[in-house]
Image 1 (cartoon, helix red, strand yellow):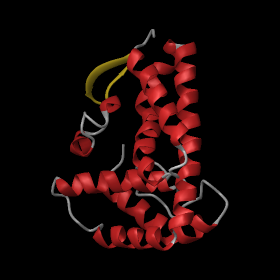
Image 2 (cartoon, helix red, strand yellow; image 1 turned 90 degrees about the horizontal axis):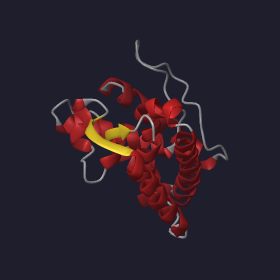
Image 3 (cartoon, rainbow, N blue to C red; image 1 turned 45 degrees about the horizontal axis):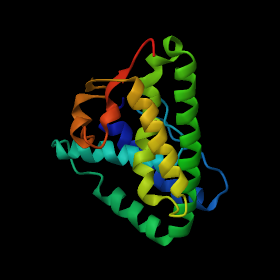
Image 4 (cartoon, rainbow, N blue to C red; image 1 turned 180 degrees about the vertical axis):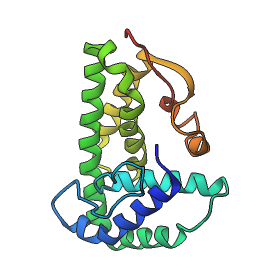
Length: 190
C-alpha cells in the first residue's frame, strides 16, 4: 500500500478540489499534484478514495504517528455538510460504479480462477470502498445492499481465511468482523 505522507498529501490535494468535484458531472477527477517520491501516482479523486485515505490516516494516527490530519478532516466534514445533496449523489454514483467493477472481477475469477486469484489483494480495495461508501449512498438504493450481500456470498464460497493482506500498521483500522475479506485470499483453482 502507501505511506502516511502519501495519504495526507492525497487528502490535501483532494480537499483543494472537492467542491469543484462535487459540483461537476465527472465521477473520477484528476488530482494533479505530484505524489511523494517512490510511491504510486495519486488515484483520481472520488469520495471513496478520500474515505479510504482518511481511514488509513486515522488508523496510523491511532497507532501514534501523528494527528496532523485534524484540520483536513474538519474541512472535509464542513464541505460534506455544505454540499450534502451533491455528496450523496456522487457517493451513490461511485457505489454503483465500484459495485460493477467488483462484480466484474468476481465474474472473471469464477470463469478463470487461475488467471485472476492473484489480483485479489488489489481488487479487494473496491470492496473496502463499497463498505466505506455505504453510509453515504441514497437510501432508495436498497437493491445495492442486496447485490453486495449476494456478491459477498459468492466471495465466501471461494475465500480462504488467512492473515491480513495489507500493511500491518493499518490492520487495527480494518477489524476482521467488518472487513473479513481482508483476512485471506481466493482459491487458486476456484
